[in-house]
Each structure stands twice: as C-alpha cells, then as structure tokens.
Length: 317
Figure (cartoon, one colour):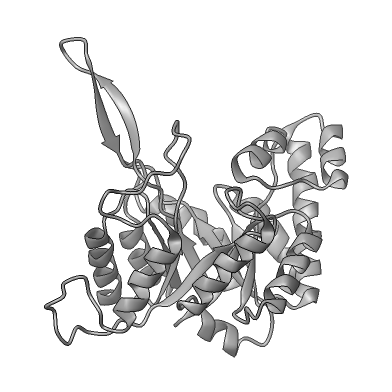
C-alpha cells in the first residue's frame, strides 16, 4: 500500500522506522534482530537507506596505488523484499543520484515494480566520504528533481528507450526530502522551499524531513510550505541523541542545530549513558508535541538505536 494511502486511512498519527542496510558480509538476520523489538508498534512502513559507493586507494604489488570503488552497504532492494515478506509491512527503498546511471536507476525501478513495492524516496544523496562536493555519475542525475522526473515518467509508461512503445505504467508513490533548517547548499530558505515546491509540482506525493531537535522549526517549516501552496503530507524525521560527540558531529555533518536547553543538559552528563537518558526524554517530549500538533506520521531514524526509539514510542502509544 502507498504511504499516502496509509495516511489517508489512519485515524491517528502513524509510526514508521528507518534502517541501514547491513555492511557487506552481514546477514539479513541483523536486520530482523534490529526490527523485531519495534514491530509490536505496527509501523505503517519501514524505510531502507541507500549509501553510494566510496573510493579507496589499494596498494598494488608494485608499490603503486590503485583507486577502486567499494559499495559497503549493498542490497537495499533485496532487504525491502525480505522485510515485506518477513513482516508483511510496506518497505520504502531510498533511490539516490550518486553512483548510478539513468539505466541502472530504470532497472532498479523495474525490479521494485516486479516485487510489488509501491513506494520510493528519491534523494540526491551526499558526496562520497573524503570528497567535498557531490559529483553525479557521468550518465546519471545531478539533482533529486531529475531522479523524481524519471520515476514520474515511468509512472506514465515512459522509459529511457525512445522506441519502446506501450511501456507498462508503474505506480510508485514518490517521497522527497524536506529541510526545516534549510538544505546546507541552498542560499536561503525561500530558495530551498521553491525547489521543494517544484518537486511536488513534478509528482512528489509526500515529504519526509531531515532530523531536527527544535519542534518550532518544524512548525514554521510546515507553515511556510502551506503558505507556498505545498499541500502534500509532511512527515517529521526524528533521531535519538545518545552520545556527547553528536553535539559536534550532527551540526557538522547534518547541518542541524541543537536547542540551548538540550545542549546544556548534555554538557552536564558525565557518560554517554547519561546522554542517552537525556536524549530519550527529549525524543519522547518531541514526539508527544508533534503528535498533538497532528503530524500524519512520526518517522524515526533508528540507525542502530532501536532500544531508545522503542522507549520513545512506548511513551506515546
């Protein structure tokens, strides 16, 4: 079932989770071990992230170095199929621009369609580690809106091959990312929102936000979206804060602010266990306030911390 159908049928705020694919060499059991404690909350859907390949330099026998491409977390399509089969819950694969040609993207969409996967979240993706700027595949997309257009075209039966007639129309529900604190590459919030509106006009069915820790920034973001005529559902993305190093890592990598009240309490903590207690309480209060606001879904970035997410969801059920 589509994400938008879940939302339309819901009588209360829904719950959803987001997970990382296991590292290459790990089994699907690591996914089940991660999700099993959370499934009692009957999530409407589970997102599976995709990480682009990384470039590494390997030393050759002659002493020189060779640049090689390594994909550390493959298997998103297979993981989505396994989740749907194992739990009977909808899975939402992430599609990214980086590291994929248009042809590879089309083939992935065909596979997803064959598997009966109704939803995709389209993203540009980040630059590879140790590289400053995002570089698209030479035969791929530079921006998320271009990737979105490819999915929307397939929903209309339009494939890459010009001479392919009467192509089967796919029926993907398309999600896109939103940034309550502005995408770090956008010159200002107004420009960022204009890009988001174009995505909706081009076929995006719903929005999932980047993590945030100040609910007022989400409320302001929703208000500005509505003022611009963006009417699709907007789903808040929530992440548990569990260690002191996140105080500097999250602002640096994800370009999000931590509220003064939160950072003050974290600075009082002597151990990461203490930080986890503070972060859990903050996440619970965030969740309660967002639910009271009437958000359609609370989307939790579990990312290795199912215990903390479980405590938060238990507190609001």
